[in-house]
Image 1 (cartoon, helix red, strand yellow):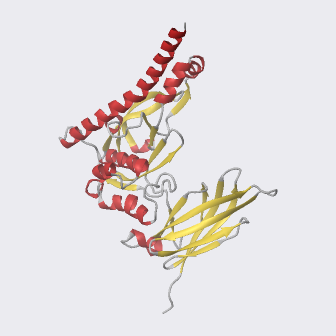
Image 2 (cartoon, helix red, strand yellow; image 1 turned 90 degrees about the vertical axis):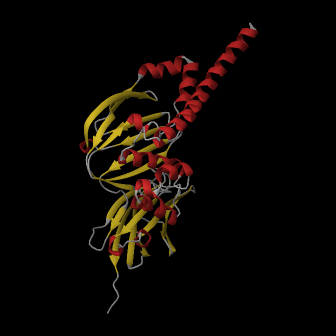
Image 3 (cartoon, helix red, strand yellow; image 1 turned 90 degrees about the horizontal axis):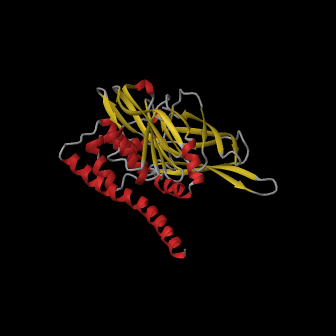
Length: 344
């Protein structure tokens, strides 16, 4: 009886190890084959597919990773796209942190002169998370009760699913930017998703690709927008009200100071929420204002609606924390800009 028990335990462990190792072996073989087919011109990626793959690599390991540079060098994605997503981020101390500490703030901009294909099958050759789904506003999901119950009632099944369902990449498009959509359904983590995109054509135009990396196992969220998600301010714009996740940074582009050099008119605002569990539960906000080759400035706010003023090269930015909460883990702020012109 004891021997049978040991054999059963050994089989269970063997199955778990096999489930872990097999994807790694297939992934290694797939990477070699993908590199060969791309070199030979057998697989050709559209401009949007390359940008999506590059932003996944960027979120995963940053621009300095050799894998990123091999597929996403300036001559392959465009000098302007590389400078905004990589060079500017690096100059502001954010390379490798674009999707964690400064999500959506350093997009990769592309301009499509004509429509471009988006194929999940081609993306999967480079995006190596076990799961990849492409969503739009039409996507819906419902609980896969069979999967949930099986995980509870069959421990071995639950362990296998736990190890096999690790990282996932989620690419989000706006449905109105897509044509010729071929849909699919897909089940992951106990949820069945419907109206996912398997293949489509992205309309011509300018797009900003940016992302977020969060959770455990890793979740990669890559968005394709017709507008940038960083903050643009000018002397003519109204104050912008924003909800910020504490510990993250906002990129602020000052349009009045705009020139050819991105480093000159882009700044970084780091927002930190300090929570001290005293008998009154003291909480306050620390703000750090950073520019390239520009003195770092800071400000501390322990009462809402207290403004902080930071100098820019040709003006000043006022940041006012409207409210903040350690319990809700959020900070609401407004940002405005005032130009300062030298008297003649």
